[in-house]
Amino acid sequence: MDPLSTVRRRLAEQRLAGDPFDAVGESVAWFGAVQGQEYAEAKWSLAERTGSCVDADVEAAFARGDIIRTHVLRPTWHFVAREDVRWILRLTRPRVHALSRYYYKQLELDADVFAAGHAVLRRALADGVALTRRELAECFAAAGIEAGSLRLGYLLMHAELEELICSGPRRGKQHTYALLDDRVPPSPLDELSRDQALDELALRYFRSHGPATIKDFTAWSSLTVADTKAALGRLGGELEQVGDEAGKAWYAAPVARTSSSRAAGAYLIPTYDETIVAYQDLRVVLAHEPPRPGLLVRCIVIDGRTHGSWRRTLTARSVVVEATLFGGLTDAESESLGQAVLRFGRFLGLPAFLDARQPT
Image (cartoon, rainbow, N blue to C red):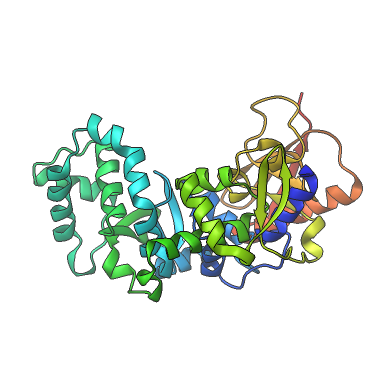
């Protein structure tokens, strides 16, 4: 697979270069799940794929519960569309529990402790109450359950995986937890069998991330190679093999998404964006190697090529995007980058300025 053409197609399938979504929940559902432990950056990741979307729009969708932030796929937070929470949890939680088993043992978290912790959470969050981590730690302490920082994290993650709790609406800048049943009504997708759920998740992944490999999907989903091959066999014509390199097959939707005029644009890719975390081959992710290791934190991508990294500096009145470039840009590339910076400013509701420099 040619790295540049692969990245360009992925940008279209991921709806960065392609036509944007109308709503935040649609964007999340397209992927199946979107990594979201860096909350502020994950909001920008969703907004880049959603037309005319600003920070307040993502916050409103989160407060309504259109999107839920919970532990799923891997032992980290993801955004999941409300209607997809339960079936994805039921499919992937055995694998996430397996990946967390070492820490459960080290922290002396066994079935009895988890059961007692779940009982505390049910009482504390009854009747629609939403509480912060600190408040829940106090509830655990009052019940005689030790809940230091790391132990608290695994107590809460276990309860998320077991469909007891999930994200509640934010209280100012603080995240809260609420009972899942209070935030997520039943969905027809809850009735999917395991094979149906596996097929649905594989379809969403390869449709939204393709071209991608089996190794990409298993790392992203925590599911096994055997499960993945079985799903690909059942999906038949809904996906196609688009290339083979040294015995490594690539899969994608049968017809490449037609990208709009945004295809040649510039993108400020945030930390843990799906364009990065969903793949294993850095050469194909970047299509342009950084001049030295460690330079790339957040990607500046222009027409499928990675031209540098960026970070933001916020004040009460403006945002400055500091861009560290790998080399010079053409006039057209500079114009595209400037437009991306302005788009980021509109997302934050602030005037935005570009401070571009080349690495020393």
